[in-house]
Image (tube, rainbow, N blue to C red; front, side, top):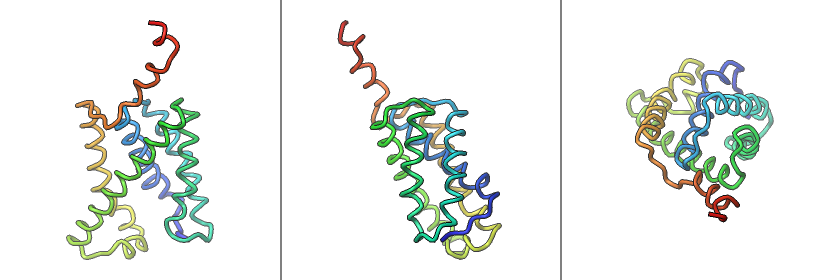
Length: 166
């Protein structure tokens, strides 16, 4: 069980969820409005708050949150399930890799391990900030230079009846 104060939903969970969603969607060629991404992130983060009070092993909450996030993206952002799943897993992988790298860097600079930072309110807020800034800049660069790993947004056009008639 990982106790998370309610205000951390807005200081950590919502930004992290927004970054995960935006990064995954952008890397798969889908552009969704920030309002819709924020709505999905807010709903997932509130749900996450309640999951974290359950007596689960650390990290298990992701296996409950990710399917909810996928379902919300499908219904709110109107992106097909398969593409949403791939985008979500891609976003999760990118965030996990970046978090691992930044946690190592921050530990080397401060000498404060992640477990100790999670126990201190101020450090729990500050620890992910460099990672969030880096990923936000990365998302902006991906948008600006239109970098896409898998352009699934065009696959919808390819499979449509309108395209087949042309």
